[in-house]
Image (cartoon, rainbow, N blue to C red; front, side):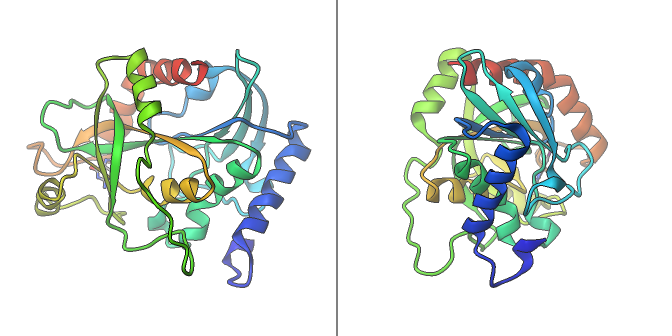
Length: 270
Ligand SMILES: Nc1nc2[nH]c(I)nc2c(=O)[nH]1
């Protein structure tokens, strides 16, 4: 992967990726980009007409996803409004150990296609007791526990209102029952111990996951407005009395799919 070359410029590679997407789709500008996390995979079918589907491996800097449940494609979707959405079904997780540049390449590429709104979705563990598996929640802020950053050098970027309150209010105007919470990104790939979940709770977290925070920082650096949403597919360790299982996670995501993809379709159409 060209991003593995320390001498490579990640922004040049994002521009190359955007040019490749334009070449392969004939679409030279996208307005909004969506990253589909566990359980959100079907959203592209509901938000508009998918006119082009590209294998992510055909685009510079993207790689085959390590996680089943993630499709390695990029899709250009024509929205009812006539705007264009770039749907990223090829998320690289930080726990894959390929470095943070690979994790945020899709966001930088989306910005290079012209997108000014970045919608980051994920599957995550819930700390609030009343969140049952299959509950979608808005991300109000994050706590980055990775100890890493996509920003390099003296790049001091403000992260106030990182998860746009305007877009959260828009989402709530569509579904007033939507709750929100602070997302804690752990490195993973292991799930948290009950003690780590209690730590996350003690420091003000409501959601635990293994993605999103680093992508959001890169999206802010690119000047994008960000909406983050988590599908609570399990209660975090210790909050729920039974052990976590990946199978349970996939199952809860599938059950919630029609609800959350309809929500996403309405938000994007607004
Ligand atoms: N860190 C973390 N990530 C997750 N992703 C999903 I789906 N559930 C979890 C969880 O409980 N913890």
